[in-house]
Amino acid sequence: MKNKFLFITVLSFLLIAAGVLSTIAMANANTVQVKAEVLNVRSGPGLAFDVTSQVRKDEILNVIDEENKWYKVRLSNGQSGYVASWLVKNVDVSASSNSLATVTSDGSLNVRSKPSTNAKILGSLKGGDQITVTSQSNGWTQIQYQGQTAWINSSYIKMQESATKESKNSLQTLTIRSNGTNIRSGPSRNNSTVEKADSGTVYNIDGVQGDWYQITTSSGQQGYVANWVVDVSNSKTKKAAKSKTTSLAEATIVIDPGHGGNDPGAKGKNGTIEKKATLKTAKAVAARLEQSGAKVILTRSRDEYISLKDRAKKAEKYNADAFVSIHFDSVEDASDSSVNGQTTYYYKNKDQSLAESINESLANNLSSKNRGTRSGDFYVLRENTQPSVLLELGYLSSTIDEQKMNSDGFHEEVANSIYEGLSNYFKN
Image (tube, rainbow, N blue to C red; front, side, top):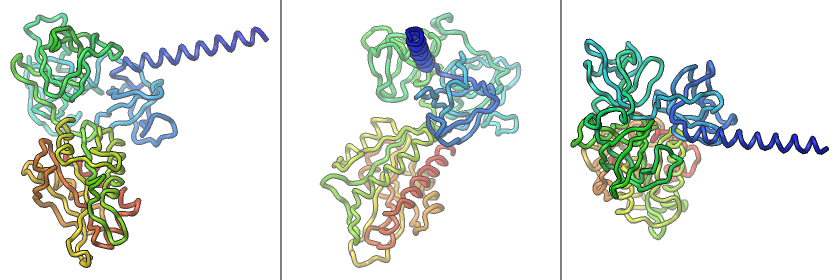
C-alpha cells in the first residue's frame, strides 16, 4: 500500500513538472515547425473544434498566442487557427519577427505577390539591399515591400547576425505599432514591464538579443521590445512606416453598436428597439471577425450611453484599421412601411473603397433591398481619424425589415457579409 502511494505521488509530480515545462516552452516560442506529415488547423484550442485547414510537414508557423497546450498560429495566407503543441517543434528563426536580411543575388531578385515562381512580380531587389523579414516557409521568405506583404526566394538572402555583433552605426530605429505595447526589463515575455509605449513612438535600436530589440526607454533605462510588435526603419532619423495591413487576421477592427443607455434610437412597430438590435448584431459580427484572427473592440458591450466623441476616439486609441458603426434606419412617417433595405455610408473619399467593399458583400448575401453606398455627414465618420463606415442595416419603420432583423439567420448573414467585405478590402 505504501509503495502504491509513493508511485502515485511520484507520477503526479512528474505530470505536474511536465505541464510546467510545457507551459514554459510554449511561453517562449515565437515560431514553430510542423513535425507531422499533415497537421490539422482547428478553430479553437482542442480536438473538439472544427478543422479549418491543414499544413504540411516542415512548414513554419507564426505563433500569436497559446492556450491549453495549443498554439494559436498565423498561416501563410493570413488566416489564423490552433495547432497541437505536441505535433510541432520550436525553431530559431521567428516567423513573426521583423528579422533583418541582406540580398546576396548577383542580378535582380524578383519580389512576388505569393510564394510561387508563377505569382505576380511586384518589383525587384538588388544585391546588398537590406530587407525586413516577417516569415519563412518552404524555401520562400515573406518580407515587407513598399508597404505591403511580398515574397522572395530564400536562396538569395542572408539573415543578419544578432545586432549585438554588428557595429552600432548599422542599427536602425523602430516604431511601435499599437498602444500599450510592453517595454520589458529583459528579452523575454517573462520579464517585468518597465513602461508601456503608444503607437507611433520611435526608439533607436541599441542591440538585439534573439527576437527582442534592446532600446533606451523615455526614462533613460535599458528596455527590450519584441520584434513582432514594431516596424523597423532603414534610417536613424526617419520614422518607420506602419506596415500596410493586407489580411483581416492582422487587422484591428472597432465595431460600434449605435445608441445605448438613455439613447434608445428608433423603435419598430412590433416593439424592436434600435439600441438592442444594434448590440445583438454587433456581437455577432465581432464573434465572426475574431474567428478569423482579427483583434475586435466594441465601443459598448452592454446597454450604456457612449458619446459620439468617445466612439470615434476609441478607433484612434486602438489605431484601428477599420471602424464599422451599426444602425437601423427609420422614416419620419411611421405609417409609410414601403421604404426598406440597407445603406452603407462614408464621409471621406478615402473611405469610399471600404464602404463599397462591405456594401457589395451585403448586397450579395442579404435578401433585403440594397440601397448602395452614399456620403453621410455623421459625427462618428466626420471626426474619425481611422477608415470608417456607418451601416443602416434595415428600416425599423418597415414591418418586412423588422421581422428579418430579429432572426438569428439575419445576424449570421450580416456577420458573414462584413467579414467578407473587410477581407476583400484588406486584400486589395
